[in-house]
Image (cartoon, rainbow, N blue to C red; front, side):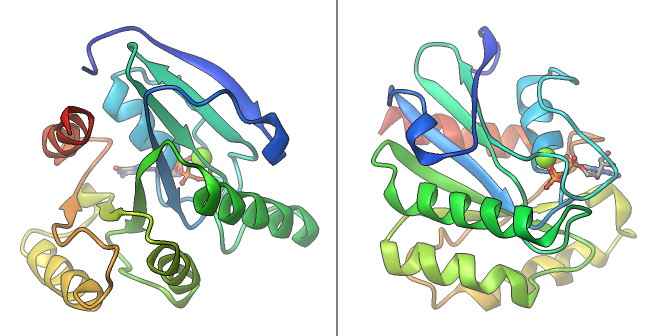
Length: 197
Ligand code: GTP
Ligand code: MG
């Protein structure tokens, strides 16, 4: 699935700029700088497909990438802190929320959480909205390579516990490292299962 062609289709800053719906769409959401764009690159094996930066607030549009003929990945602006004017951040957050709530071809949202920090209060409005709108989502912990050996289990257990009563949350949490590749085969398999449904 991920070995096929992949290409950038479109960047949208407004809802009326979204590309036509086709196949299965999967979106990556999360606080600024958690590693959304890096994960898109990790999954596709293309280091520069999505733009990555150390500065929070790098991705400023909904960026659509077509993978083969059946799958579209959507890299989104982050929420929470960003090195950008507050009005811009507010506009991105609104766009992200409206898109997530209203896109019929959206099969699942991957909500990325920095593995060093776990869930933050700024993550909760997104989870609440997805639960309320019954949009299926799965939590992905990022930057596994930044934790010490043995810390992963405890972080996983904590996040799993925090989401267990959330109706739209997929119970399995995946720990990933876009840098080292941990968890990427597991995540690809989860996405492949969605397409086969
Ligand atoms: P915004 O677009 O600003 O919301 O950020 P983003 O969530 O797309 O994060 P991005 O992929 O740009 O990564 C932010 C920083 O984290 C960059 O410096 C990346 O190199 C780093 N990073 C991302 N994933 C990993 C990882 O798995 N391991 C390590 N060590 N660093 C990572
Ligand atoms: Mg980004």
